[in-house]
Length: 417
Image 1 (tube, rainbow, N blue to C red):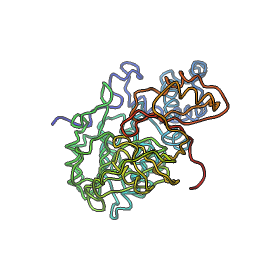
Image 2 (tube, rainbow, N blue to C red):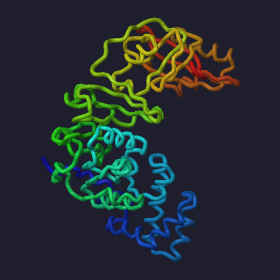
Image 3 (cartoon, one colour):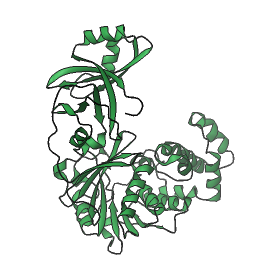
Image 4 (tube, rainbow, N blue to C red):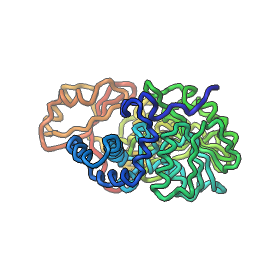
């Protein structure tokens, strides 16, 4: 196997960096007193005024330093969505580092699971990137060795540990992860690079490091977590792993394979943030019942669907699927949970665009939310053809019921059940 963790976040062909410039030296210039002063003055930087800002700053600062500071200011603004304003304005980033970093809420969830496992006082964070997970682990009181092969990325991770006052808990090492002896550490976390020069990588063995190496390393540690793409097929999950899918704000963010003491090998888990609720199953659940559409429709969270735990939702709400191939659950009683979005259904009809248009016009629907599962119709095309007008709103589901193309109309449930 060749050298791993080699997909450098800001390699020599990064278009954001001037040709011939040493990226580490350019970054370190931002950590000088002059660079820190420039960044502090750009906290409320307006990208629309970049030319005027750059012109003004270059009167008193070197052009290369101004360019680096403006680039960092842009990255900090992008990072707010993942790290929050308080941390983002103090941290440092690379373009790919912002894109690939774990958001704070998800990293904190993972750190909590490590801390709750018992006996985890140190973690080797392999392929640490700009340090998002290392920061969360350190904030949970865990000592971290953070490793990345790319010199710039390692330097940024080191700067972030210092910026957040965590340098006593985070040691950053620029090295190939295959050279690291993880035996002194209570646990291992591996986050393989899943993007290359041509974009996202779908073959797990093309990850850097490959999934097989990461699994082998995880199995050799007392406890371990391996971050993977949420679209991983269940048959590719190792038997000795607990698989967890995590969503945040309704969007599935990642999957994690957990190994070792304190984790349930062969089980599946769906975790919903920010609530923090988890569904768990020791194995594949039985096939849920299928039946007619009731008064209520429940849309399971994406993590629940990815984890294959829709049957658990069906059992909890005492409902049924509307079709054996569609992840919409229906029931006759109101039900609320962190794992579902609920709707009260007012209309149920065979798929017919003309009839739908007439009904929406009669009800003066001007705002239409369109959801689809098992339908080829695009939501934007449907809205265009409906020619919506009026003060009311509705939710339309384009789906299949017992195999037949169907339209369901309703509105979100409100208030406690």
